[in-house]
Length: 598
Image (cartoon, rainbow, N blue to C red; front, side, top):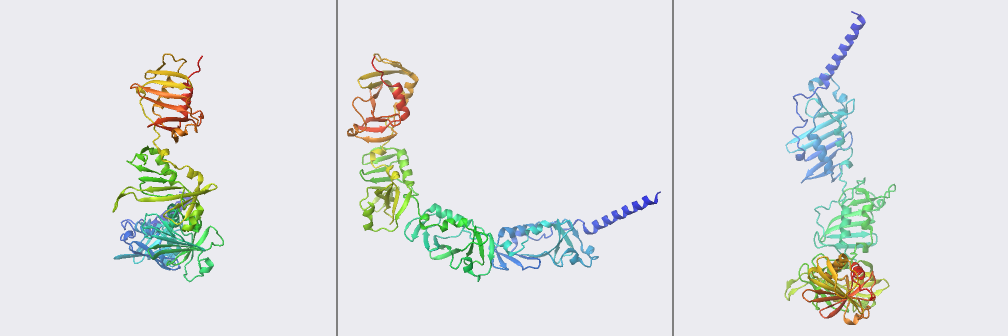
């Protein structure tokens, strides 16, 4: 045998033996040992966690009544999620290998070899009846694992180095980044000091609308107030700047603060937040502190924008606001009338006792709720001020009433809102709510869109017949007459003596519209308005004659145009002028007109 080959085999054998010996002594699996390193640890039961990163100050958090609180090196609300993640990791921590105490006997410098002489971190976890102490040593040579020792237990564990990601490096890693948590906090008062501007909002209870009580009594913009509170809730600390309560507050713009938001319940202040200057290196942040909580922090300035606003920015931007059911609408002016709800879907115009159009009532309520304030004309008003705005004797008044309730005087409809409208100035008209001491201005065009007379709100469905009941159409135009007879569904013919050609399908479609005639909008009523809107005795007229002998007619004004046709009908002996449907007017003009005599 070749001696050189023999030596090669000997070297290979020695290397294999060395590898096997190293594996058995240092990288042996736990075998029959515990599945987890801390089998008695229950994350949910832990009451205290202490971590000392290297040689730095100890970081301690205690759980009381389900809330984690930092107690060392400072007192501060703790970031519960980070602590819970560490506890969960320790509870399920399983070694990838284990070095027994017997195997460590041959290593006199164990603490130095495994990094326990100056550990990366020391951990203490306490729970009722149990305490665990751990030391985190050096990383293994590949760097993906770390040596771990349980104080009081023999041997060394090798665990995944991901454990280091759950350990805080400084107390700031475990400080709660929430500036304020409004969930569950009871408060009914908001006081804001923004430089020289001060305003205060109050509400009767959680969920109730906010109202302004200082510097004057007014309705608040409830939506904006709630959105501003949500933005306050979403503030997160970007930097923990200073932990010393005795720090130079003036240097941070906190003495006095540039902005202060106080939350109160009754006369008690629940929380006070103060905001100052921006850091010199980042204008997007602003220094802040919460009174009663240690430290100064930096938070995003953009989330505070609503609180830097003017007083009027937090006032209700709409003239009418209500939350309950409106059961009656009173209008007082050139014409006094009331829209009274009969059922959920029906209304009547009183005292004229006309059927009201439910769609028009709905549109009116929508218009009133959307009547936007374009100017806060005067905040505090006394009686001598009213004539200048035309409000001493209002030109028009709208009163919204709720559902009837029992009172000593019997059933009454409580007032939801009462608004007076005065004179107009340019493109705006002045208005005043009788329950507030302010004068507002709204767009004159918006005000003009509101109904001023009860007849404008009449039901727009003029009549509704079945086409099967129609016997014939009588068309009159000046001194010419033409009759079209209905013989059955989609079957029309000219009556004896009538000339021309008819489009049967077009006549059927026109008839469908005429049988279900509805006004687009009421224009006027009364025979005295006929001339004003271009009606004469020779106007085109369409008459529907039914099988029972009944007749209904509609006539068209000479002032009608394809885009603005005027028509008139007689209802209960009175002439009603209205805007006719443009598509139906086109059909009448094209298919129901009377041809000229040959």
